[in-house]
Length: 232
Image 1 (cartoon, rainbow, N blue to C red):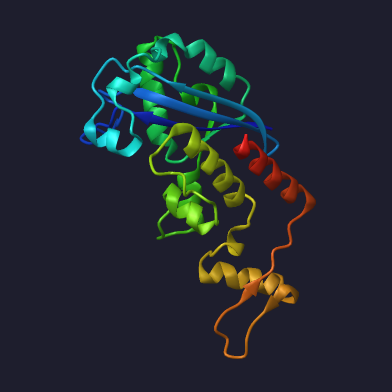
Image 2: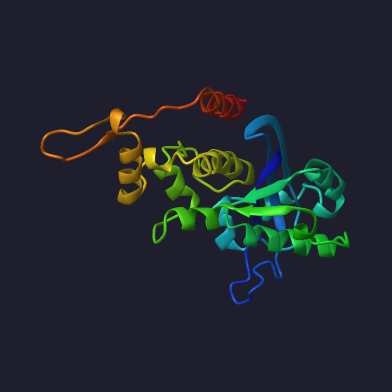
């Protein structure tokens, strides 16, 4: 199975409209290819000149201002490269995917590509998955990195490729039922303890429970592939 983890950064968003992309543009796109849940090392990372002002509020988030983007290509000139990278993907995966898809669809319309992103690809939203897994809890990317013990110390500003790299690890852990090992809600930890009671230890005062992870060879290999990809 071929999947693409992706993220966008934008000139801002239209807070007063249901379509957050109305009046705004994509200025950065980051994509990572994974096949059978393993990163292949193939990525796509592009910046774009939006030909309009980047909102100061957005600059504070991602650090990309008009001076930085002035010499970058127009997204309309890069669609063939983008489509070539995405072509054949079984799924596109993003965090708060509806936001990113609104922006992609606006760019597709402006470029007269004749389709919406949902027409060609199955979209997986990790925000939706996380809300189902951890109801009532914070599930933004930083919160999920903390929950899953993923090092996001380098995320001083948002960045499309960096955020895609972090989301890759979040997605694999979120969908591999490892959440109980990384600070999941108490009922989830209790369920895990019941199924792995021979791997738990608890002091006499009942203050805490240690859960020992038993990773399969496939999980260990997938984890190492992620580490190798991030180092590159």
